[in-house]
Image 1: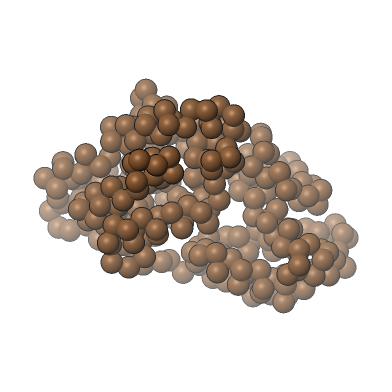
Image 2: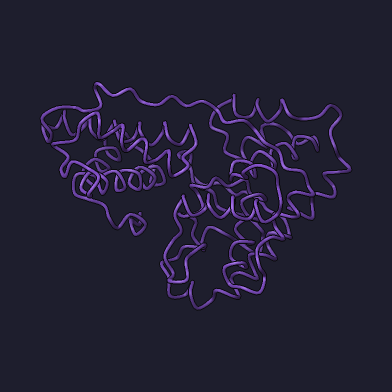
Length: 302
C-alpha cells in the first residue's frame, strides 16, 4: 500500500494503523482513510489551536476538533465516522499506556443523522456540467470531475484518493476500492469524453505527479474540502437553487437508475450503499411507473 497521500503521518498513527491491519484485518483502503483522518487530527493537536501533545488532549480538544470539521462542511455521517476514528485511536493510545487518560471516555460523539436526499433534474445537471470554463485548465479538470462523480456515483472522499490506474477509459469503468475488495463501476460516454479531454490537457502535470487522477496545478492530490467547494461553486454558477453537494450527484444517479427500472441490488453495488436504509431512501423518491423516456435522455449525462 502506498502512503503517499498521508505524508504527514506520525509514528503513533502509523503504529495504530499497523495494529488495525494485523489485529483487526482492515483493508488497505480503510487504512488509508483512517490514516488521512488521524494525520489531520494529529496536526491539529500539535498545531497552534491544539494542546501541543497527545498526552494533553482533553474532551474539550475533541469538541473543538469536531467544530473544525463542521466548519469544513463535513456531513453528519462523515463527521460521526471521523470522530469515531479519532476516539478509537485515543482509546488505543490509553490502553497502550501512551497517554495518561482516555479523553474520549467522557466525550459524547456526534450521531449520524442522514442528510436530506436531493435529486437534481436532468436540466440542472446539464447546467452544472456546463458551468466550468472549457477555456481554462481548471475548468476542464472540474468538468471531468463533476461528470465522473455523477456517472459513477463517487463520494467526495473518494476523489482525492482516486488514481489514474483506477480509471479505465477503454472500457469506461472505475475500479472502486472497498473493504470487500475491488469492483468495476461503469460510466457513460459523456464522462469518458470529459476525462479524455482532461487527460490530454493535463498530460505533463499527471506525468510529473504521484499517480492521482484529479490534481492541483502542482500535481498534488485534491482535498475532500476542495471537492465540496468545487461542487458548490459550480452549483451557484449554474443557477441551481440552494447549495449543491457531492451527495446530491450520488442521489441523483441512484434515483435516475431506479426510475429506469434498474435492479436495486445493482444500484446498491454501483453506489456502494453501506446500509439498507441508504438505498431505501433513494427508492422512496422514485416516482410511480418510472421515467424510462426521461432516463433514455439521461444517457447523454452518463
